[in-house]
Image 1 (cartoon, one colour):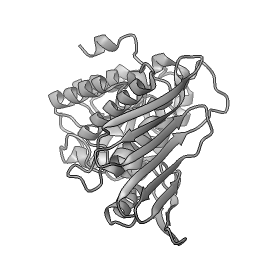
Image 2 (tube, one colour):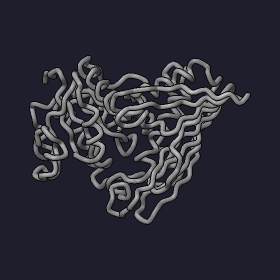
Image 3 (spheres, one colour):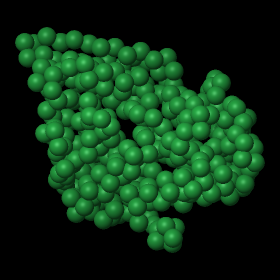
Image 4 (cartoon, one colour):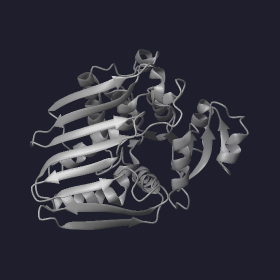
Length: 353
């Protein structure tokens, strides 16, 4: 299959995150959205929500579309691995929403399919592409805060009207806080703890965790303590039914770096993010990172460049293949340490055969 340029994309699953992804593609010279696959392709609301985009039909119809080079998988979590593997086997490149799979086993199966098909596969952690993340890494690598000792990272929210049928509260759809948002603080902690190492990523040697499991059987809030080989300790938390802070703090021997809402840059539509540096003598410095582009545009451009270059996945500090696999393993360990069974769809075993 010969790719066209700009890369022609299809979206698989028209949920909320797909709208954010679409917004980030506006004005791109490297890629464009040409088709959409939906379980309800005849829904008239799709044309209004995705104006100018051809409704290819259901998921299988999108994968059979010869005018689609790459697929963005935005289904519920429990369907990520199944449809990403199906897309790869049909010769499509794949950018898959996080978490890549429900487990490290699924992630390994997905990358095996990518290698077999000789097609691009990457996990869509949009914050890893944002200039703000590079600025954070530069502060740490430049010694601004000294040697890193501790990290505190969190991502949590409370749905205004939680309902048992919502995907986040359904075990069969991969619901729960750890899978939905826990991967953000885990991936950030591993990135920061690994600054200065040969691979740029560190893996925890110890994981202690606790979680609250609600009435529907998913973890609604959870905290974990990760220790790394270099002595760094990371305190992480996530939630889908608790209004908690969303913050990144990196504590070093010279200063403390603090950033509110580290996952969204200066806002989805662009803006200014402020890194706060606090020093022992009371000084406070601000590092402003201004980006007029949409939050999701950086990720889209990076994927298009990688596909055009025939790269198998993304490059650091984005989520590389090795990084995604290790992050999935860390999430498996979080589940195990908290005594929570990680989600498994009914067809999980069959899908991995």
